[in-house]
Length: 449
Image 1 (cartoon, one colour):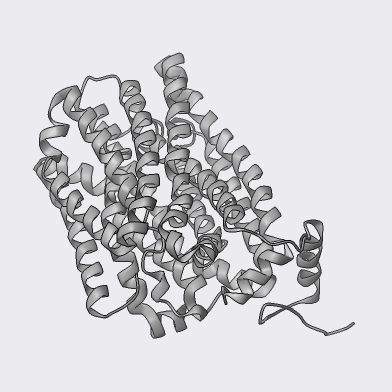
Image 2: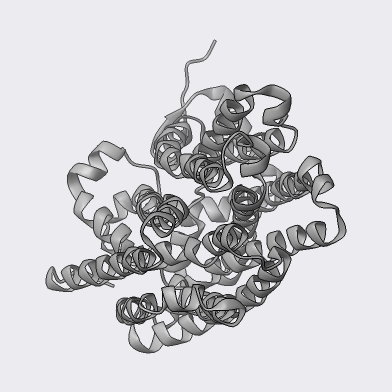
């Protein structure tokens, strides 16, 4: 048997896996130029499918899982437990990045992406078919936790390098515009997920919704993942895409070497967008939990207002591209962090201000989220040397999500229940302060935007 090694970039892979990669590339082989617009389409498709999956679980954590998996606790405590399980994915995500970068070095990009998205689909489908606590006892909670961890590992592994490639191939004076395109996946995914839950809750009795209706969004998420997998593979398996990645040196690097050489840049990059990540769950998940626990307001009405907020967030993301191309991404992020700090001071008054105040909190929050989140992706990853940019961009996002967003619903609800809504303001203010500090330090060190 031949021992000839086949190379993917500079990394050796075994002959069997190399043949599989070649077959995948030949299936979609094309030699014409891939424009930034085509890359942007791949980014939007990939991110929209991931965010839909993301928000289906997030909404269920606030509205379904406390009653289905933690019925033995009071509603508040059950919701806190559900939010704790929700955070497991964010803890697992950096580990998924490390694991799947190793898979890519060994077997190639297509194999890594396929395995990651199949794991994500399997985990999502597993939750859809999961028996409740009343049917399976504590084993149901253990399985829910295992599937959530698997989702986090898969999210870490789904990094395909498209956002970095898009940023590097965008025209110099349009990088803010192209940076925001991938972020449109967030409001798109949220709008579809919230609309689906709103429809089901409006048309089903509460008992039917908690019994079987909540499972349908997870079925839809699985189907969307399958479609998105083939859409992304069609792009990443082309020879032109491979050539662009190799030209830009967008190849997986050792995480240990990355941390030793450029760990400072990774930390600053994660903190620079912390205000956006902190706000992310405070206007999506937290209001659903707080209002369902402490208000008699129909939760479907809150979802409908959040859908409008999602549209405002999408508009804010588009606006952020125009603003960033005029002022610079770092200045845009810093300015929005200051606005978020101001907004944080009104959180208690708005949330505790009846339906009008809650609607204002949600709609203004979504608009600010769009403006800030539009430039949050890879805000400082240009500071990474080319050798580490592929892995560094993924790990920076993972750490930003973990520190800023992973525990946000748990912390916000726990603090507000125990000490009052003013502590939610302090939580958001701390995220804004961290962003301003990171951006200021980046400027002092004369690093790039």
